[in-house]
Length: 590
Image (cartoon, rainbow, N blue to C red; front, side):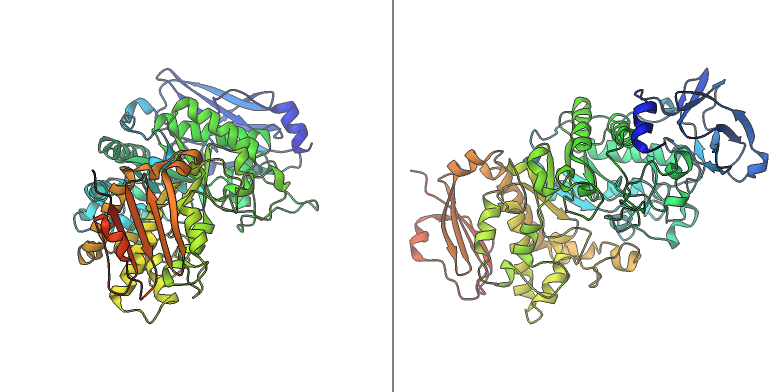
């Protein structure tokens, strides 16, 4: 039976797969239409042998196996054991599980009534262009933070200690690198392992290494909820980085164990598609994986009150799936922000169907990382080639396009579809990239280039996005792919915040300026009416905003502001004798 036939015969519409608890009974349901027998296996403790598990035979109806277990089974440890026509049998954790033991290879029944209720964000933005997003990793921001107690370093609860700084800077949304359970950190030895988390294991429950007690299945849930609550109470939304485009190991994953060959996209010759570069691509076009993604994301939005989702390798997924996801999520919370990496990847699906930048017009509620902006501002990739902020000629028009919310590498219908950035967790961070591309700079000139690049993120139309520490010249020691490099490379050096406090203050002023002007325009007509580009050549960009502000941007070493602009009252936010500058002038009010 092929996947299309499985979809036609066994598609299951209800949203009740997994283990659903009540004090009187727990109902277990698993979609496994190609299995000939499925057993629920109950364990008394995490280390009990498979041979000693208690077997509960499950019944089946139209491909869904189910077992109604009377009594209160909160905290019950369980797996599923499946048998197939070819004689193979497998035991697996529940792909729909909401809880797990340490390291996630057995599932746990969760009574969510025992967990905190997360309040909604009280001040969500009504347009993504009003969001100011900072990306961060739970461990990176906590292990070296001077105020985080030792017992909370590397934890959800430790992450709350940076809230005062974020508020002062002007950040109103944080994007956390994966918070859902991932495979390659031993949760029982979490201080000896490191990973970014793009190796998903359990999609519907939090990563245990960020909890204070991974052996307590409720700890990770309660502490993540407490973290989100504290951010929400301080007016900061949570965007969750999600990884549905691939699994970590296909032969050890619950998808392969429950419905072999169904969840993965395949080439014409039957081999696994590999646009993700992780030896597999998930098949979002298959109806039950489309439903899995929708149900999973809806669960995070309902139970954890997540305010947005950043999709890893969004271009692997198909347009129809992502639009259905958007519809479901915006029914739960109309303010949810959606965006991702819309790169065109070599996956085995028609390019016209994929959720890429080129198909942005087909997905008007999604934003896409604007690599054209990144490349023109600081230079592409991890090479020593620079961009506009390095004084590279003929980049002015790209910068002007960014200021006007335009880009050539996508079919964008609104500025809200452009995620403008010059630094993210991938590739060299801005500080290291600029030292590589302009190695002869002195520290003053270098810091001005950092300010110029970061400021352009906030002076351009679209959705501004930075990585935490970008604003105070964080370094990853030249490592362009530090996904497993450990604390020495990845941990934020918070001492730089004080050392480079002038840079932080400057970026804070730029953020405040952005939020007080039409730089947060929601459509191209507004931008056309509010913005007049006066000059864009020879390293100089000058534009008038709202007929009120004159903004002068220069990357040249010898540029002097023409005297004709002195008729404006200056509210200079920064300048330097080397000419690498941003200055904002405000007209006299007559």
